[in-house]
Amino acid sequence: MYSANGPIDYLPIIITVLVAGGFVVTTMFVSNILGPKRKNKTKLDPFECGIESQGNARIPFSVKYFLAAILFVLFDVEVIFLYPWAVDFRTLGMAGLWEMLSYMAVILIGFFYILKKGALKWDH
Image (cartoon, rainbow, N blue to C red):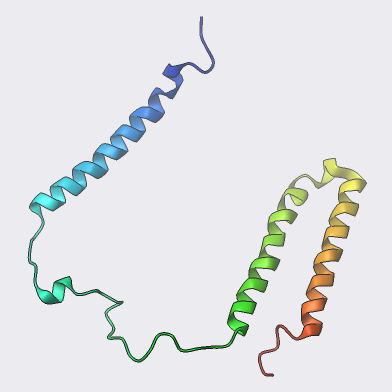
């Protein structure tokens, strides 16, 4: 009798994982054996994008950059909640429409609040 979730059903996945893992291990081993081994002071120094560092990296800068990033994430995440509604809006009916309109109202209230507070103004 055929079982729907027997161990044999997972055999292709196991073979793929073994082949991929074997490829990674083999490639790393062969590159370590065949690769050049030239160690000197310049090669062992930390590499920072190829540019010599200039000055102190801990210079204070405006909080507006962080605020803009946080607000972007906040309003970008709302799309995650809009997508399932948009995909299935016909089956949700009027109840789904009212729920989404109330959600959008809350989002718009928050947006107008940050506009009123001047969170998006850069020159003050």
